[in-house]
Length: 235
Ligand code: MN
Image 1 (cartoon, rainbow, N blue to C red):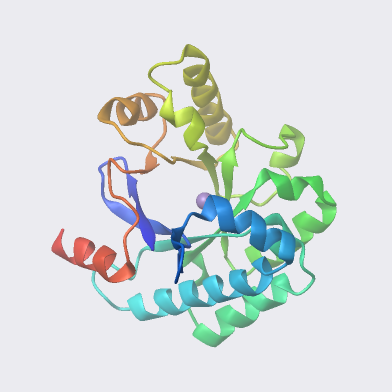
Image 2 (image 1 turned 60 degrees about the vertical axis):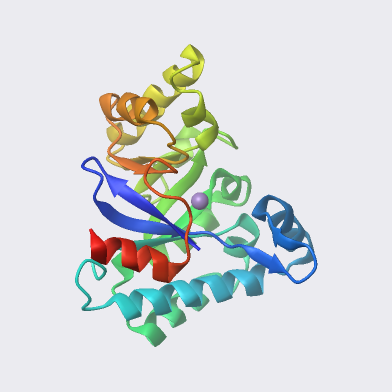
């Protein structure tokens, strides 16, 4: 499924790919349950490859289609996947095979990748950046934060974690964190997106604080791709 991402005027600029597991017996299994399992078993690597290939194939299908060809698809990449020695080559081969405009693909990384060899992380990111792949730092503010590393990574976007967004209008502390993250991102020349935006009050606070990209139920819940496409072409 995919969830829309919108700009300050609520125009759709892209979507994040969210993996759901429809288990024959258990029904829908939440990613919070199966992603850690996939990480532990190493299954995250083939699963991630499949998600990336599907996302690139989707971008290729949107080529030349009104309202869809300019959209960016964001794919979550776990630290374990990113660390895998074949990761960069796999992304490059997938870009070659689908011949898509790489600026339409955004990889969402979490701060946990910075627990690894930072030089190696920067090298891998730079190799992909050279092909114009976009990078977003996901769940920002919840993990291993070293602000010094932030400017070494060729990032395009910071993504404010939904735990801060959720209480942005009820907690002075979270409001202050959010304002600081937005100022930090903008100061570094990055785009700042907030995830988990559910109410107009949250959106207004974020917009007033300088955030101009949003994702959350206020704009759309995660839906199958065909439903997402119908929503765009109907707009
Ligand atoms: Mn994400």
